[in-house]
Length: 191
Image (cartoon, rainbow, N blue to C red; front, top):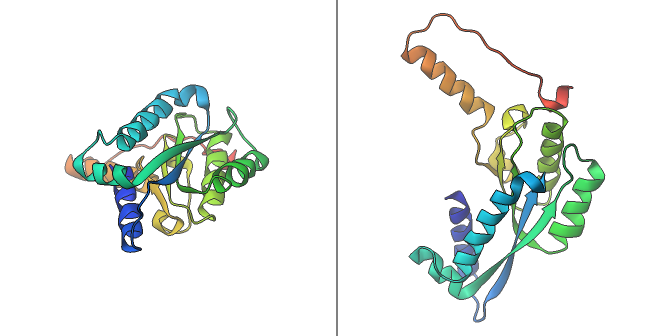
């Protein structure tokens, strides 16, 4: 749904500049941390892009499909922990080289280890490009940003740790539980 909002925002900005007479190609970067686990996500994204391009989606998207063609640009990071060279290669040689307008970053792993800090590093580096980022990170509880995510132009689809904590406290208050315990593991950046 938020991807739709970003696409509509992009559409309105381009329309305000006078529009286009021919279909403009818009590249969307799809970044996966582990391709084997993300094949389901890849298939869903490609199907969505295909539906938008063929005007088979909702009526507001049909107008977009008449003026723009969306093209996925893949960047698959290595399985497990990846290094700064992998991140910079993905950002510089794939995403920026193909002039992507949006980055979609997906991880399917729920392990909180070195991959968590590697994903956080990718998001920090990608946020410096100024390209909007939509991200789904199952292991995002270990993420820490000094500012709100909107200042980094990141839209986090999985609930951040602050929202998870607020939900737990709301449950404690709702059911009047005076005692509780917390079980945690170390996030990836602290190992």
